[in-house]
Length: 139
Length: 323
Image (cartoon, rainbow over the protein chains, first blue to last red):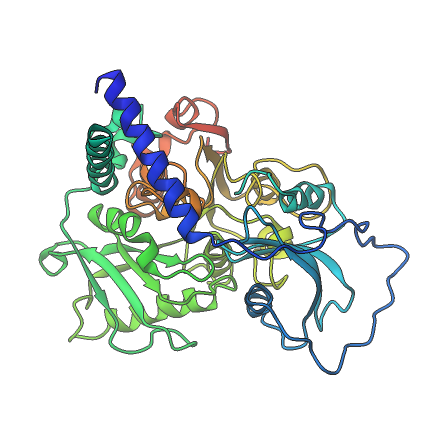
């Protein structure tokens, strides 16, 4: 394929992809501290965190929270401080606790892959949590 | 402007054609094969394939199973090896048809539950039991057609955990596993819906860990530290030395490249698909051909340090203990 045609081809594909991305990713309403999710230190194994009592009436859930909770599959699971990235709303970060692990721990949610990572206190989770920041490459 | 529109239209048509093309011209696609074994198994096998769906549930969660197999299975003189497939999170076999048909074209019967949560491996074992029942049913196309001494497992993402769990809990019925993008244990959700360390370290069989270099968030090659198995290298190292094992990462491949049909399509980047299924066709098929069909040449490709796998240009992070 000649070079100019190749360039046109690439430009065409990029243009179509950009239009599709605009259609597929509707703008989300601005949230406080967008992108500045998960600023708390990781839950560390010692001293042992004290479990907090579970709330009796769950607050209204956003679609992303509903999706996260569905993936956890625990009717007693709770989320807090959930913030989705503006530039990649399929990625959300916050804290969760479950019946089996009743301490709030940081999580990273990749909605397009239905994958949820939980903070294990390792540096590897710190690397994963970097994806919560605006502008970071989307996996 | 008219010219530009025409150019964009032409580009769209070209891209659509590219997205649906078969990987015939090996050198023109990403992660093209370079050696004889990879090239051989990169191409489709000689069998035309058929896909059927069970009329009733085939697993304990009420899911149906899809079965991919050579169309002429009834007229073949030999029983065929079986591969049990495990889907990634929230996926069905529909997401993997290119890969599963590729396996069937090489003479494997592939059974895939439509379960979307396969991590425990229980529904994968259910699908194996379903095929055992089919094998004994004179009305089934699989009656006396399956070689149950040669059963393998394979799976993607959560399904990679499910495939490995199925093997380790099969009491030896499943003898090998290929894992695609086996997630780090950090991603286990819930924690036991993955390949747990005691399960792996106490296991037997053989295993081939396959990931992509662009999947560094979910299935990276290495990790910083910690006691969890958070990398392909950690899984490989934790695999008992008595098991035959290999590990490799496909260059540039992201988490969902195995779902390519065969490319990623124009919106592949939205699905974490970078190159498509191309590079996954060769060596993973060769591994199964070696383990389940006795292709010694394919097995030699994985010989530690010197086999063809170790010089293939599409791969990196390779290691094996194959003598």
